[in-house]
Amino acid sequence: MLEVVRKVADLRAKTAQYRAAHASIGLVPTMGALHDGHLTLARSAKLDNVRVIATLFVNPKQFGPREDFAAYPRDEVADAGMLERVGVDLLFAPDLEEMYPENFSTSVAVGGLTQTLCGLTRPHFFGGVATVVTKLLLQSLPDRAYFGEKDFQQLQVIRRLVRDLNIPVAIVGVPTIRESDGLAMSSRNAYLSPAQRKMAGALPQIMQETVAELRAGNPAATILPSAKSRLHKAGFDRIDYLELCDEQTLQPIAIARPPARLFVAAFIDKTRLIDNWPVI
Ligand code: PAF
Image (cartoon, rainbow, N blue to C red; front, side, top):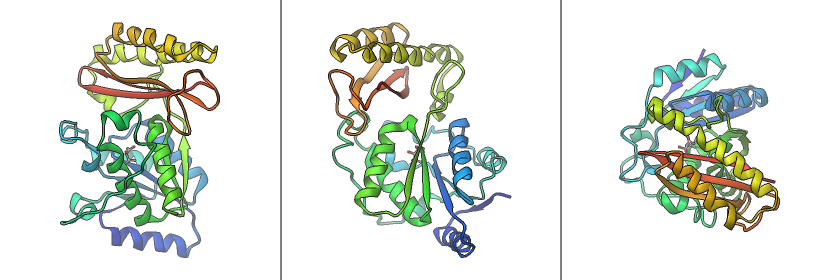
């Protein structure tokens, strides 16, 4: 039976009980609007740990002033039902005041890795993520915490902050879960109209073709411009980036060499879709 707690003190009382019973704890942080990608994180956490805690908090600090915080899909009852069905033990769903009480004035800033890709077009994003994830990890102190590779830059930023701040939690990256046409699962896919959703299927297709061309040793400078024009033709209005990067440093590279990964962020109308694929 899934139990829901909203206060840090109640979360800590539950984790103390789990610890007293020598149970390992897996944490699955989410902003709700759950889909099979999130449930895969929860299933991975179930395999590795005796107890699994999910968190549900739509974090205002990671949205820019003109972004979709207000419109972000929210359905706690449906989310709780899904988490219960995959065997999650506890849902921590704090309100805004519990996470950011009056005069909250601390933030966690990760340098380097955040100065590229999404960090350039969403300058507020990683500070908000780093701050909330640091809080969630310290509030629950799990053995392991699970994050999807779909948000690969976020995963690397979290790995770095945990290492830099000596937070005693293992960060586990879980491969992206995709729809049948290859589109990466995302809560934001819900914003797409049926026609836009159909168009979005071009993204994984063009990414895979581009990965093959890069893997064959062609330079990014010749391959990426034509991939961008294919994305435009397929209906992507704006492309924030399409970059071949070293997956450790997240810095652009000219020719694929291990560990290379292709990263994209592109819009269909107002919906921003991101994805990434390993190259070599
Ligand atoms: O990936 C997400 O859903 C969020 O960025 C996270 C990690 C739950 C922090 O709010």
